[in-house]
Image 1 (tube, one colour):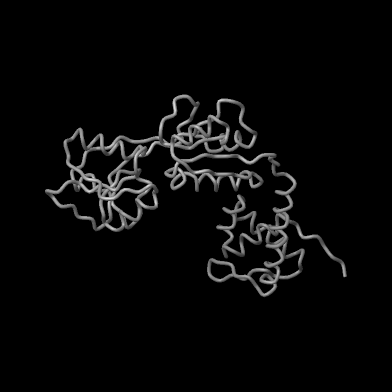
Image 2: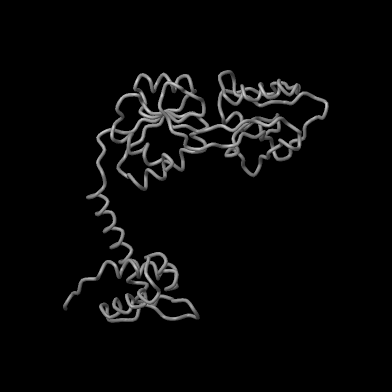
Length: 282
């Protein structure tokens, strides 16, 4: 029995067409025209000597032989891509060490880590979470290569990753007592958002009280969901069970904050440079 080689581009298009059951949608996936996809499938059918699709209205359904081929095609395409990445991906000698404030970990880092995993799958990342004072000293001592923080550190070079509005947040069903001081949910001393809240409320002569204090963002979320009070935070913290209460409670406007990426003053490792370039805007 003569064995013929199966063309990888044909198999890749076949998988796309089989999964989408439509040549037009498959064409978008493989960046070809619908006519080109149709021609590719005709060529593949000629190689294997059987029909792979049957028409059902405007869609394409796999024949029994098409179903059998699909399993092999997926494995062949996956193995090809795995082999290519193994040979071509960059090898990094050192991991990138990132120091981050808890707000960056909660909002920005998931997106950036996903970008890094896709672009540099061989890059190892070590994340240390801490407060601004510790982060600054860790970057200064070389314990971390990069620092993500919302607080200013004038001694280090930085790029602004994102500027976000800061709003007053409470539980979706929260109702404040009209004549009572505002119940605040606060992180204990040293927190930028705590200082921000105290400054604007003092300036507007709005009475307040510390209804709940915690050392973690997880504690802030728990207190908000329990309806213990309100807190100032970036809009990224909003979830369906929380709401913005700025207008509802006629609260003073809060200034926006910027998430900044700080770099070590000396030369960073290649891995840190690659990560920095990847997530920096522009």
